[in-house]
Every structure is written in C-alpha cells, then in structure tokens.
Length: 453
Ligand code: UD1
Ligand code: MG
Image 1 (cartoon, rainbow, N blue to C red):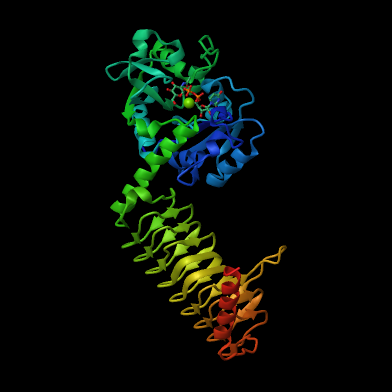
Image 2 (image 1 turned 120 degrees about the vertical axis):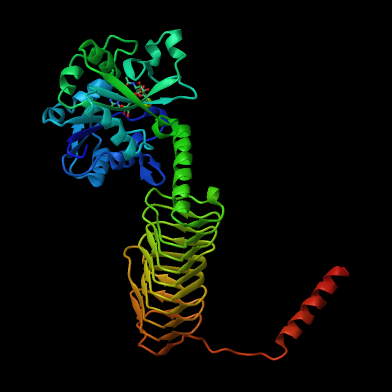
C-alpha cells in the first residue's frame, strides 16, 4: 500500500449559495478550522502523495487557504460549474502526470478521516478500477443511490434521475471515490451530460467502468463521516458531530471534562496529562494546555499556551499570543493578549494585560491595566521578576517596571521604575473630623423641612 503513489483531487468550486453567506462554503469553519483545511488534512500526505484542489474563478481566499494548509497543492480553476466530472477534468493535467491511485473528495465533507481514505484505496490494489465510499442514509433524499450486486457496484443513480424503486434504496454515495490512476482519464472523458440536470456527473464513471469490463466496488462508512454541508443547519449538525468526537478524544487522552457537552474545542486543541476543564469553557483555534493545568468555568481561550499547573478563570479571556508559564494564575475578569506571563506570576482579578511580559512570581493587583494603545500604535510593557503592582494602577506603555519593583495602588506609571524601587503617585490626603456626621444631620434637617410643607 505505502509504495502506491496517489493524487488526491478535492472539488471545492462553487459559492455554496444555500449558505447565504459572503464567505465561500468551503471556508466555513467546523471546530475552528475551515471545512477545506480539514479535508486537506485528511488527504494522503508524504512522498508520492500529490494533491490538487479545484476552486471557482477569482477565489483568491480559497487559494490562500489551500496554500496555507498544503503549500505543495496544485490549484485548478473551474470556470463554469458544469458538474463533478467536469470539475475533476479541470485537473486533467495533474491526473495525466500519473499516479497509481486517484482519490476524489468533496471540499464540503469536513468529517471525513484519513483512515477511511486509506481504506477506500485498498480495493484498487486488488484490481478494482473504481471504489466508492457508501453509507446508509437515514433520509436518502438528494443523494446518489448505489445500485449494487454483492460487492460489485453496477451504477450510481442520482436522486433526480432515479425511479421510485431506486429511490427506496438507502445505500448512498458519500461523495469520495478512488479510481485507478492509469484508467481515470479514459473513463472520465467518456462521461456525457444527458441527465436531469444537464451536468457531467462523476457518478456515471461506474456504468462506464462496467461497460468496459472493469470492476467497480464500494466500501461503507457512517453517515456522520460523509455529511455534506450545504446549509447553515447542516454546518451546525457537523459541528455537533465534530465536538462530540473532540470531547471523546480529549477524555480518552486523560483530560477531565466535568460537563463535556458544555465545552467547545477546536480541531487543533492540544492537552497534556491531568488537565481539568470545568463546565462552559470555549477553546478557539491554536490552544495548548500543559500537564496539570486547570481551566475554570466561563473561560474563552484563543491561540494561547497554558503552562504546566497553571490556573485560568473563572471568567478569563486569553487572546492570541498569550503564553502562561508553569503555575501562573489568571483569575476572574482578566483579559490577556500577546502577553508572556512567566512561572508563578499572578494576575488574579479584573485586569487587562496586552503586549506585555510579566516576569516570574510577579503579582499584578486587581484592576491593573496595561495602556498599550494610543489610538495609532501599540506599545510594550515589561514587568520584572517578583515585581508587585498595586491595585488599580495604569501602566502607560512603553514602560518597564524593574525586577522586584513596587508600584503603589492607584498609580499612573508613565516612566520606567528601577528594580527594587517604589513608585507611588498620590495626592495629599486630608481628614476632616466630624464632617460626615454634620453632613448627615444637615441633609436630614433639609429633608424633614421639605416633608412638613
Ligand atoms: C454529489 C453526488 C451524489 C452524492 C453526493 C454526496 C454527483 C453527480 N453526485 O451530489 O451522488 O450522493 O454528492 O454528498 O457527483 N463541485 C464542483 N464543480 C461542479 C460541481 C460540483 O467543484 O461543477 C463540487 C462542489 O463544490 C461540492 C462537490 O463538488 O463540493 C459536490 O457537488 P454537489 O453539487 O454538492 O453534488 P451533490 O448534488 O451533493
Ligand atoms: Mg452536495
């Protein structure tokens, strides 16, 4: 198997008008990662495994997503949307370069796995010319039906072209197909467009292979794996399936999810050992949580690293570029962005830390704000090891608080504080003895006078 070369062609042309969105269908995310990137991740990788993606004209955004996921992918543009076989033939040059196996997969089936695609190729090594990925549909309406005799596939009948009897068949075409790479072009070129939609159907390849005395077969998978996304409701269904899978995988890897159904994960969330995630936590893309860390309820984390035994939340927001060291603590109503917070540092309450570095074991008091933005540019705040920032301080960046430095509560710090120094900004305080009592008495007298009128 491993010696066989392969070309995977992903069909991703078309806006997906039923999504009612300005974003092309295949760029919609499932678990924080675009459907297209998920399909590309499932496609065979490595030596001898090539990839081509068919996109619509003028879709620079889709092309960019392809390049980011697989820089080696060929991009083919389908100018007119004339059907799945027509789409595949826009990659004719790539197919012509030769491969043992050709896989065709749709860009809107994000739940497909690499193991299934490997399984799909296996019958080719045993002499099948075409292998289709089938599934038993709860409601087969709209899908192509597999007309099979034993393990042989005789034809695929598209829903619009199917008879009443054929429509009763639950075994459907999941969309992915493996074709003998040497036979693919000659089979594809025979496909016509005499059908209900006037399209060039890739599914016609089955009858053509049979007519040419070649063997067509199928394998089966679950409906969940081949869910095709055409609408926002189907997108939400796929998201639910994906979340279920990700939660299951996290728990199998040893993560404690106290209420798994309330935790949202991204396809790339990484967990160490003995991590505890409390109910109602959202992980966006690009998050790593190291061994023994605890993420408390109502926390939102995107593109951030949570170090060993760190503690986050409840009600914390870690934005992109946050890196927490071992045992660091982020408490309630704290927001961080582009912030390295070293081992043992504490930011426990009501604070914004942006574009900053906080040294090990520093303590940031409640209500501290790094003022990192002047409306035009962003500036950095540097807080040294073991520094102590008193509550309700504003650190106006660029500014450095030296190691062991101390900032008195309520200070607005605009210039650097040397190591081990105290910076304090206070107006003189005055005490007026008995003032409050006199104030109350005056007010009560005034109120009583008004009331007696
Ligand atoms: C297709 C199959 C059907 C199968 C179903 C599974 C055909 C003819 N039918 O039907 O048997 O049960 O998928 O979900 O293949 N595309 C292009 N260019 C085109 C047409 C389509 O790139 O000209 C791409 C689309 O972006 C999409 C995929 O091919 O990713 C499938 O096209 P779609 O129109 O959704 O086919 P279905 O009617 O769902
Ligand atoms: Mg479809």
